[in-house]
Amino acid sequence: MGFPGTWMTESESVVYRVVPKCACSTIGQIMYFSDNGEFFEGDIHDAREGLHKWAIEESQPIIERNVRAQQTYAFTCVRNPYTRILSSFFDKICGIQRNGKRYRGNLVPLLTQKYGVAVEGEFDQIASFRRFLLFARDTIRWRRPMDPDIHWSAMAGHISTFIANGGRYSRIFHTEAFNEGMQSVLDAIEVRNPVVLSEIPRFNESEGHGPKRAHPVEDYFDDLSRHLVYEIYKRDFDLFKYDFHDPSNKMPTGEIDLDEVHKKLGN
Image (cartoon, rainbow, N blue to C red):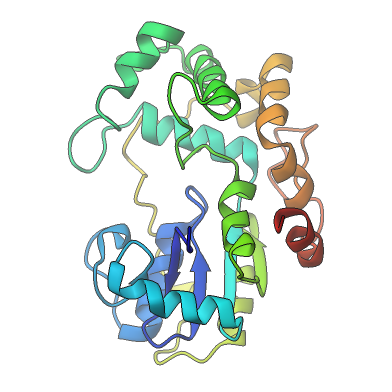
């Protein structure tokens, strides 16, 4: 299986396991800048040089050697499950992607037909999101009507593949304390080009794809929706220390226990 979703600087200073919807565009650009002294022109997900990626065949043996040796600093980043699934909905379901089309072609018509999700005009954001959430649960629980998408599958699933195949994380931090977490990574590694986080723009590649969220986070989650979210993301809430009981509290409730993460996700 290898190390899907894993990026590494060409200088081999640091390894990063991408978790979709968790500041991955900004992190990728910081890694690229730390090696190259400039940002990648365009979406970092499109970069085919200047950064090792598992999706690039010639990068795979270099990444595998580094990760299995566990000598290179490795990290990832997580996000509150409530805000992450909401972000996925507004970006991937409501939004037009950078190729000018709907995400995954026939996905939105499928959601409209089978789940009654509306995304055109002045639609009811709360009703459509709750119907999308039912669809997301069905894809994750039963892999119907399709396999789960990387943008709404659980963070624990992404993070576990790195551990199960022989990697070990040096740090996992929260997007909600991004500068503090990213600085701890930069302090632990040697970079070719100094990175001043206060001067780094946020590369939110999904911003502007879809409509603005019209309500507070908690308004989207009634009792049934919270039950569905917990069914999908129980391990994410528990391992990465987020508050399931209060959707309005996006902040983590404690520090992530790396030993616990490796023990529970390593099997």
